[in-house]
Amino acid sequence: MADDGDAKKDEGEKKVVHTYPLCRQSDMPEEMRTEVMELCVTACEKYSSNNESAARMIKEAMDKKYGAPWHTVVGEAFGFEVSHECKHLLYMFFGGNMGICVWKCN
Image 1 (spheres, rainbow, N blue to C red):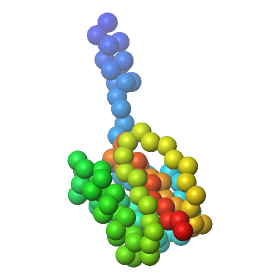
Image 2 (image 1 turned 30 degrees about the vertical axis):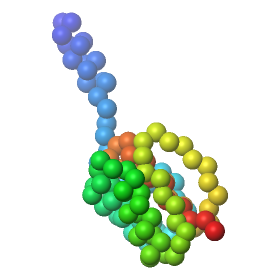
Image 3 (image 1 turned 90 degrees about the vertical axis):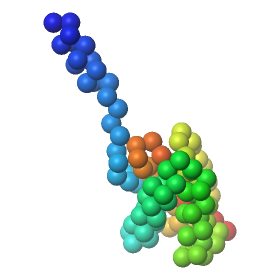
């Protein structure tokens, strides 16, 4: 009977990892948000072991498409407080624990 308790305990401690992008906060228009989320997913999948390269790819693509200056943070376990242009902020999670923050400011 002790084995049943241990098995239930192990099941209760399993970590849920979401493999889909999860938008936590955004004030972007729907179309822009969708494009930026797809770009972030692509960058994180391409540079899964190098957050700096993923952030650089996102920033350069955003600068080219929507005009400079865009800023990007890709990583785990970070907080932020930024000043940004209205309608130009996205904070999302991907792959469970990867946080991505993209914003534009002048």
